[in-house]
Amino acid sequence: MSDNPTIVYDSEKANKFSGRMLTALNNGALCLMISIGHRTGLFDAMRGLPSAGIADIAKKSGLVERYVREWLGAMVTAGVVETDPAGSRFWLPPEHASSLTRAAAADNMAIFAQYISLLGFVEDEIVECFQKGGGVPYEKYPRFHAVMAEDSGQSVLSSLESHVLPLIPGLKDRLAKGIFMLDIGCGSGRIINRLAELFPKSRFVGIDLSNEAIAIARRDAQDKRLSNVEFIARDLSNFHEIAELESHDLITTFDAVHDQAKPLNVLKGIYNALKRDGIYLMQDIRGSSHIHKNMDHPIGPFLYTVSTMHCMTVSLAQGGEGLGAMWGEEKTREYLQKAGFRSIQTNQLAHDIQNNWYVVRK
Image 1 (cartoon, rainbow, N blue to C red):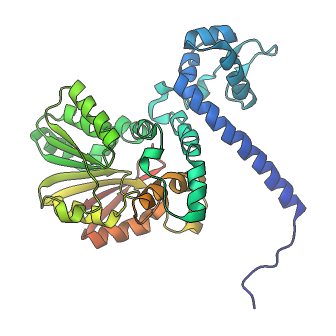
Image 2: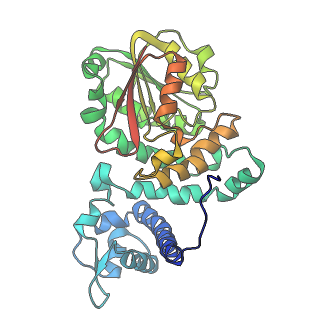
Image 3: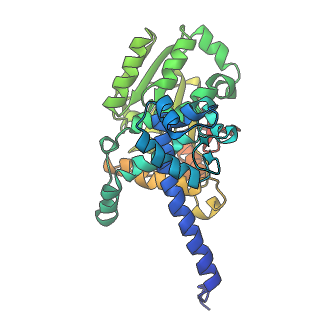
């Protein structure tokens, strides 16, 4: 007997799916407009502003009125911005501002909308990869590090002191007294520079593949006059061979392992570089390694899209494994164990639906 079910055309199902596709089309377009509203400061300008005319909104935001008018058209028809019966005055409800403005801090979803336009920029290259294989390298992504910095500001920086550091009991006290910390895949260095500010007696090193990101991190450290932090641009595909043995008290990776060319080599290097009583704090995407177990994931389609169009392909562009963002907890634990780790504790933070937080020891 065949395992394949008999397929019968269901017109009701077809109509329902067609409606879903219309919703997806509108929501995809809405993400582009939300990204523009975030980048131009329109949402921030409208936050707390009483109902106002288009000219007043344009003036407050310092933007061209004609473009603001068309943007408001998208916002009103999407139900994001509200208008009076005459369509002459507009306002952003406070309930909507709480998810769309910089004042919303960790709850600002507008930051994530930027990924849609960012990933769309490389669609042609991704299509070619579907046809010929290979990958799209980091340098093809404009503004990637800027968007990632905002993303990490949401999930990490905003809760660094209140939620992240307390995952490891006593860590704040150890940092205050002085330890040696390494951050792998540090990006533009916002997290490690913040730690260097908070804990001047500790020493920090950040490593990232991107020269552009490292340059930003170094400028930020210089502007803050930090003398206890160093940034290094380096490909860590052979980190297991070059890691300074048992030299670090704390090693961190923030959503950085799955898009490495050789993730297992990186994890083996982290194991080698960690002191016997050291701790590895790993933030990585929450989900299963099995597609069918992610059916109810609240942002599953988004994460698989980001994986296809960035995380997986940048790894493949380096001749890497291409694990992808949704490599899942099962494979994460498998790789950590292969690297030599024996103690793996999984944590989740209430404000971060996107990630697991692993506290890992030898």
